[in-house]
Length: 218
Picture (tube, rainbow, N blue to C red):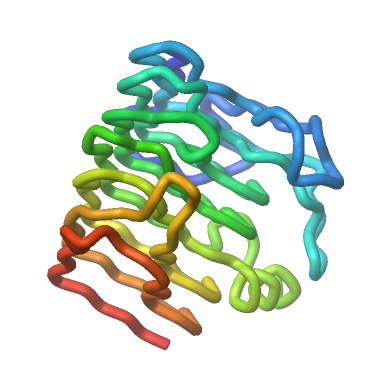
């Protein structure tokens, strides 16, 4: 476990940074190793803020690889973490991530927020809040609202998603198929604000995705 001071969802203030990691490697490309990889079973990051000090306020911003990636182990967890300004947030798709767990994830991912694929045993995502916590500069807002996606779900079996909010993305939630398949599961209390497309449903498993208490504002 990598555990910082945070014991609840975080906001970012330079004057009171808390337990903050500065991510500087990989600027200029989305390829390459993630800033942090939760490699083994039960790996956890908790109470941490991650900030990209070299990220620029422009349209487009600087691409970076994923910030947090599952390394293939089971039961990897992200708890009370703030991703201030990542280009790409959480990758639970490149490798298998059975029973992954996200709770209290806040931030302003600029291109992609969370990607899930290759999960064959019920991942859980709770209390996610993506909004302009880093900047409300028009150049960044224009980029995110024309190119950004909050969540992408591909092959995941009986995923449980609850209490998620986003503001200012081109796509709120994308359901699509990878070579491994698509999603089935359930969602509740989903609030997608200032989106061009709320739900982009390209593919699901025949067992369906059940959604309740959905708000789409565009």
